[in-house]
Image (cartoon, rainbow, N blue to C red; front, side):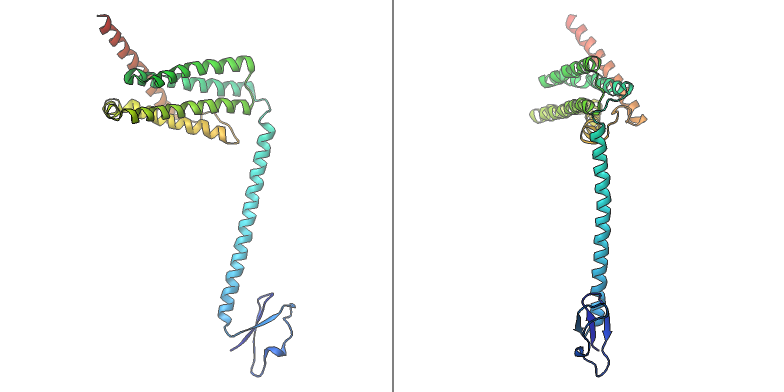
Length: 251
Protein backbone atom coordinates (compact mmCIF):
# COMPACT_ATOMS: atom_id res chain seq x y z
CA UNK A 1 0.00 0.00 0.00
CA UNK A 2 1.06 3.59 -0.64
CA UNK A 3 0.31 6.72 1.35
CA UNK A 4 0.31 10.44 0.88
CA UNK A 5 1.93 12.21 3.85
CA UNK A 6 1.35 15.88 4.63
CA UNK A 7 4.65 17.60 5.48
CA UNK A 8 2.79 20.30 7.44
CA UNK A 9 0.24 18.60 9.69
CA UNK A 10 1.53 15.04 9.51
CA UNK A 11 -1.76 13.65 8.23
CA UNK A 12 -1.80 10.75 5.81
CA UNK A 13 -4.12 9.31 3.16
CA UNK A 14 -4.10 5.76 1.78
CA UNK A 15 -4.09 5.81 -2.00
CA UNK A 16 -6.87 3.73 -3.45
CA UNK A 17 -6.51 1.53 -6.48
CA UNK A 18 -6.11 3.66 -9.59
CA UNK A 19 -5.15 6.82 -7.64
CA UNK A 20 -1.74 8.45 -7.81
CA UNK A 21 0.00 11.41 -6.20
CA UNK A 22 -0.63 13.51 -9.28
CA UNK A 23 -4.37 13.40 -8.53
CA UNK A 24 -3.86 15.53 -5.40
CA UNK A 25 -2.62 19.10 -5.24
CA UNK A 26 -2.19 19.60 -1.51
CA UNK A 27 -3.49 18.64 1.91
CA UNK A 28 -6.65 20.24 3.34
CA UNK A 29 -4.43 22.24 5.66
CA UNK A 30 -2.55 23.60 2.69
CA UNK A 31 0.56 21.54 3.32
CA UNK A 32 2.65 19.88 0.66
CA UNK A 33 2.04 16.17 0.12
CA UNK A 34 4.72 13.53 0.02
CA UNK A 35 4.70 9.89 -1.04
CA UNK A 36 5.51 6.98 1.30
CA UNK A 37 4.98 3.24 1.24
CA UNK A 38 5.34 2.71 5.04
CA UNK A 39 2.70 4.41 7.16
CA UNK A 40 3.84 2.83 10.45
CA UNK A 41 7.32 4.36 10.24
CA UNK A 42 5.80 7.72 9.58
CA UNK A 43 3.44 7.49 12.58
CA UNK A 44 6.29 6.41 14.85
CA UNK A 45 8.50 9.27 13.66
CA UNK A 46 5.59 11.68 13.96
CA UNK A 47 4.86 10.61 17.55
CA UNK A 48 8.54 10.84 18.45
CA UNK A 49 8.67 14.32 17.00
CA UNK A 50 5.53 15.40 18.86
CA UNK A 51 6.79 13.90 22.13
CA UNK A 52 10.13 15.63 21.66
CA UNK A 53 8.47 18.96 20.95
CA UNK A 54 6.16 18.56 23.95
CA UNK A 55 9.04 17.67 26.28
CA UNK A 56 11.09 20.53 24.90
CA UNK A 57 8.24 22.97 25.51
CA UNK A 58 7.61 21.54 28.98
CA UNK A 59 11.26 21.82 30.00
CA UNK A 60 11.50 25.32 28.56
CA UNK A 61 8.43 26.32 30.56
CA UNK A 62 9.83 24.78 33.76
CA UNK A 63 13.20 26.44 33.23
CA UNK A 64 11.43 29.71 32.56
CA UNK A 65 9.54 29.46 35.84
CA UNK A 66 12.76 28.55 37.66
CA UNK A 67 14.58 31.49 36.09
CA UNK A 68 11.75 33.83 37.13
CA UNK A 69 11.90 32.57 40.72
CA UNK A 70 15.68 32.85 40.74
CA UNK A 71 15.56 36.39 39.37
CA UNK A 72 12.92 37.34 41.92
CA UNK A 73 15.00 35.95 44.78
CA UNK A 74 18.06 37.78 43.55
CA UNK A 75 16.09 41.01 43.13
CA UNK A 76 14.64 40.68 46.64
CA UNK A 77 18.10 39.99 48.05
CA UNK A 78 19.61 43.07 46.42
CA UNK A 79 16.71 45.13 47.73
CA UNK A 80 17.11 44.03 51.35
CA UNK A 81 20.84 43.33 51.71
CA UNK A 82 21.57 46.91 52.80
CA UNK A 83 18.34 47.47 54.73
CA UNK A 84 18.96 47.57 58.46
CA UNK A 85 17.94 44.44 60.36
CA UNK A 86 16.32 44.40 63.76
CA UNK A 87 19.08 45.04 66.30
CA UNK A 88 18.10 41.95 68.31
CA UNK A 89 18.61 39.64 65.33
CA UNK A 90 21.88 41.19 64.17
CA UNK A 91 23.35 41.18 67.71
CA UNK A 92 22.46 37.51 68.07
CA UNK A 93 24.14 36.60 64.79
CA UNK A 94 27.34 38.43 65.73
CA UNK A 95 27.43 37.29 69.37
CA UNK A 96 26.76 33.64 68.45
CA UNK A 97 29.57 33.73 65.90
CA UNK A 98 31.88 35.15 68.55
CA UNK A 99 30.74 32.43 70.95
CA UNK A 100 31.51 29.70 68.42
CA UNK A 101 35.03 31.04 67.83
CA UNK A 102 35.74 31.41 71.55
CA UNK A 103 34.57 27.92 72.44
CA UNK A 104 36.42 26.39 69.48
CA UNK A 105 39.66 28.00 70.74
CA UNK A 106 40.29 24.98 72.95
CA UNK A 107 41.08 22.78 69.94
CA UNK A 108 43.84 24.80 68.21
CA UNK A 109 45.19 25.57 71.70
CA UNK A 110 45.27 21.88 72.61
CA UNK A 111 46.92 20.95 69.31
CA UNK A 112 49.45 23.77 69.72
CA UNK A 113 50.53 22.42 73.12
CA UNK A 114 50.50 18.74 72.12
CA UNK A 115 52.09 19.06 68.69
CA UNK A 116 54.22 22.18 69.26
CA UNK A 117 53.12 23.58 65.90
CA UNK A 118 53.21 27.40 65.76
CA UNK A 119 50.32 27.86 63.24
CA UNK A 120 47.96 26.31 65.80
CA UNK A 121 49.08 28.94 68.32
CA UNK A 122 48.35 31.66 65.76
CA UNK A 123 44.88 30.21 65.18
CA UNK A 124 44.23 30.10 68.92
CA UNK A 125 45.20 33.78 69.19
CA UNK A 126 42.92 34.70 66.28
CA UNK A 127 40.01 32.81 67.81
CA UNK A 128 40.35 35.12 70.82
CA UNK A 129 41.01 38.36 68.92
CA UNK A 130 38.23 37.94 66.35
CA UNK A 131 35.36 37.78 68.89
CA UNK A 132 36.78 40.96 70.45
CA UNK A 133 36.80 42.58 67.01
CA UNK A 134 33.22 41.45 66.38
CA UNK A 135 32.11 42.91 69.71
CA UNK A 136 33.82 46.22 68.92
CA UNK A 137 32.24 46.43 65.48
CA UNK A 138 28.82 45.54 66.85
CA UNK A 139 28.94 48.21 69.56
CA UNK A 140 30.65 50.98 67.61
CA UNK A 141 29.68 50.40 63.99
CA UNK A 142 26.36 48.62 64.58
CA UNK A 143 26.59 45.64 62.24
CA UNK A 144 22.94 45.28 61.23
CA UNK A 145 22.66 44.63 57.50
CA UNK A 146 22.87 41.34 55.63
CA UNK A 147 25.89 42.58 53.66
CA UNK A 148 27.77 43.37 56.91
CA UNK A 149 26.78 40.08 58.56
CA UNK A 150 28.03 38.21 55.50
CA UNK A 151 31.46 39.78 55.94
CA UNK A 152 31.55 38.41 59.50
CA UNK A 153 30.47 35.00 58.19
CA UNK A 154 33.15 35.09 55.51
CA UNK A 155 35.83 35.68 58.16
CA UNK A 156 34.49 32.83 60.30
CA UNK A 157 34.34 30.46 57.33
CA UNK A 158 37.93 31.35 56.44
CA UNK A 159 39.00 30.69 60.04
CA UNK A 160 37.58 27.16 60.12
CA UNK A 161 38.92 26.41 56.64
CA UNK A 162 42.36 27.58 57.85
CA UNK A 163 42.10 25.27 60.85
CA UNK A 164 41.53 22.25 58.62
CA UNK A 165 44.22 23.39 56.20
CA UNK A 166 46.82 23.81 58.96
CA UNK A 167 45.84 20.47 60.45
CA UNK A 168 46.37 18.72 57.11
CA UNK A 169 49.70 20.49 56.63
CA UNK A 170 50.84 19.24 60.04
CA UNK A 171 49.75 15.70 59.14
CA UNK A 172 51.78 15.78 55.92
CA UNK A 173 54.83 17.15 57.71
CA UNK A 174 54.68 14.66 60.57
CA UNK A 175 52.81 11.57 59.42
CA UNK A 176 54.30 9.25 62.04
CA UNK A 177 53.54 11.68 64.85
CA UNK A 178 50.02 12.07 63.56
CA UNK A 179 49.41 8.31 63.61
CA UNK A 180 50.66 8.05 67.21
CA UNK A 181 48.70 11.10 68.38
CA UNK A 182 45.62 10.10 66.43
CA UNK A 183 45.44 6.80 68.27
CA UNK A 184 45.96 8.53 71.62
CA UNK A 185 43.67 11.51 70.96
CA UNK A 186 41.16 10.13 68.49
CA UNK A 187 38.03 11.65 70.16
CA UNK A 188 39.46 15.19 70.28
CA UNK A 189 40.85 15.10 66.74
CA UNK A 190 37.70 13.59 65.26
CA UNK A 191 35.46 16.00 67.17
CA UNK A 192 37.40 19.10 66.09
CA UNK A 193 37.61 17.91 62.49
CA UNK A 194 33.89 17.13 62.18
CA UNK A 195 32.67 20.38 63.74
CA UNK A 196 35.15 22.42 61.72
CA UNK A 197 33.56 20.92 58.60
CA UNK A 198 30.07 21.65 59.94
CA UNK A 199 30.90 25.30 60.66
CA UNK A 200 32.58 25.71 57.27
CA UNK A 201 29.40 24.50 55.61
CA UNK A 202 27.25 26.79 57.77
CA UNK A 203 29.31 29.96 57.32
CA UNK A 204 30.32 29.55 53.68
CA UNK A 205 26.80 28.43 52.78
CA UNK A 206 25.33 31.59 54.31
CA UNK A 207 28.06 33.75 52.78
CA UNK A 208 27.42 32.40 49.28
CA UNK A 209 23.61 32.18 49.50
CA UNK A 210 20.84 34.76 49.24
CA UNK A 211 19.42 34.05 52.69
CA UNK A 212 21.20 34.24 56.03
CA UNK A 213 20.70 32.20 59.20
CA UNK A 214 22.33 31.69 62.59
CA UNK A 215 24.99 28.91 62.37
CA UNK A 216 24.57 28.12 66.06
CA UNK A 217 20.80 27.98 66.38
CA UNK A 218 20.48 26.25 62.99
CA UNK A 219 22.32 23.25 64.42
CA UNK A 220 20.05 20.44 65.52
CA UNK A 221 19.59 20.07 69.28
CA UNK A 222 21.63 16.86 69.30
CA UNK A 223 24.56 18.50 67.51
CA UNK A 224 24.42 21.50 69.85
CA UNK A 225 24.48 19.34 72.96
CA UNK A 226 27.31 17.22 71.55
CA UNK A 227 29.26 20.40 70.77
CA UNK A 228 28.73 21.89 74.23
CA UNK A 229 29.66 18.63 75.97
CA UNK A 230 32.71 18.11 73.74
CA UNK A 231 33.99 21.63 74.34
CA UNK A 232 33.40 21.33 78.10
CA UNK A 233 35.23 17.98 78.39
CA UNK A 234 38.11 19.20 76.20
CA UNK A 235 38.47 22.37 78.29
CA UNK A 236 38.42 20.53 81.61
CA UNK A 237 40.92 17.97 80.33
CA UNK A 238 43.25 20.68 78.99
CA UNK A 239 43.19 22.56 82.30
CA UNK A 240 43.79 19.34 84.23
CA UNK A 241 46.78 18.34 82.08
CA UNK A 242 48.15 21.89 82.16
CA UNK A 243 47.94 22.08 85.96
CA UNK A 244 49.61 18.66 86.32
CA UNK A 245 52.38 19.66 83.90
CA UNK A 246 53.03 22.93 85.74
CA UNK A 247 52.98 21.13 89.09
CA UNK A 248 55.51 18.54 87.92
CA UNK A 249 57.72 21.27 86.48
CA UNK A 250 57.72 23.24 89.73
CA UNK A 251 58.25 20.12 91.79
